Image 1 (spheres, rainbow, N blue to C red):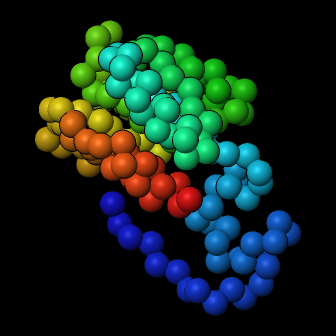
Image 2: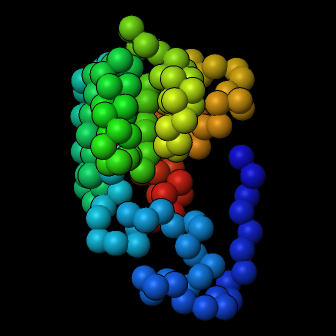
Amino acid sequence: MGAKTMSRTPLEMTPDGLPAYQTDLFPTFLRGNLPPRILVVDDDTAIRELYAEALKRQGYKVDTAEDGDAGWAVLQAAHHNSDNYALLITDNNMPKLTGIELVRKLRAAQIGVPIILASGTAPLNTDRLHLAAVLEKPFSTDTLVQTVKSILLC
């Protein structure tokens, strides 16, 4: 993943009051009062709830899905209703539809949500999937929160 560079001297202000240099980096939901919406997909209920609670404590709006198929259905419905997610956090090793398979379906459908892949056995080559991050389990909720903040810039 390449680093973005930008000038810190704004040339003008946008209609919503942000310096012009920030508009390409900050998603629309961050410019309003809406908290970023995150979907957590994991077949382990305890892990799914742990991640969701840690993120909710940080002010994020969090939904969950119990496997890749359920996650796909939620993301597809949100996309068709223009109610998109700011971020997807998915386990890789799940029954029915793995995290990698879910990512491939999203990319094929051109649903451009940033994705964190969490796995105890992360695949060797994820470059072509354009993931925002890969977290190897086990990791702390602090690591998760910091990774999410760095991706969403908040």
